[in-house]
Length: 304
Image 1 (spheres, helix red, strand yellow):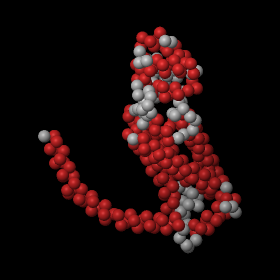
Image 2: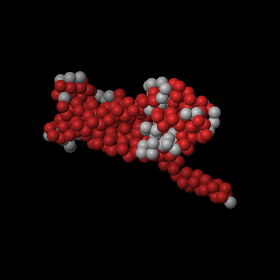
Image 3: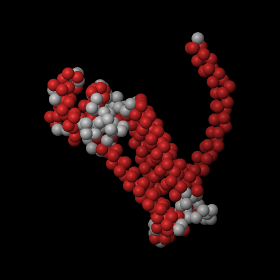
Image 4: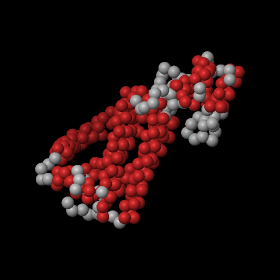
């Protein structure tokens, strides 16, 4: 298979070290991100390990209790003793009165156990040195707020996109993957990233979309791992893996004149897209000529 680029195995050693260093560092960062998810979202239901309930509680909320109680029984459980957590929850259920805040010793518990992290210098978490901030968590738990989702969404979209851009750039020099599958592998993380962010908002609206969060996260991780592992293997272990090892069988199938199942699926998809295109054009034309004017007139009638 002829190439119009320098394959990963043929790059100069300093460049391969640069690529490998970046990929390994990003992989470690990704691992710590997964661990962080386990200790935050993964503790939303009070049990270690990520589950659908954790996703629902994190974004939609657990409407059966207050946000403060759920945190004390979930991700913040280890930060206070059972007696202290019971005292706080009793105060919450008694109405979270400001006068009882000091009289019942709740202020002392908060100062000792919570304010270490929840203070004015902390970023992205509430400041519990202010009573009003604490009071807002004594209402029904409705999960992530729309403002927090907006903040986290734009951070993830900007930050993770850059990571995938550089990983995809390195992977684009791979020679063991055909161009069409390379395009799919490079594009998949972006598709799953957008789906992941969108699923947060959908889960906030309805808990049934929690499964979509897990699906999108898994897809993003798998596509990222595929590009990373393939790139490193091609840079440093091309001969033992792809010439003398198990990868040789894949290359034989790739170069075989017989179309693989994946190739057949690809052809079917392209044919399907070509057949849908005229229908999509017709629907678009009908919308512009009939649907949109009708909707516009309807909206104008409401204004009147």
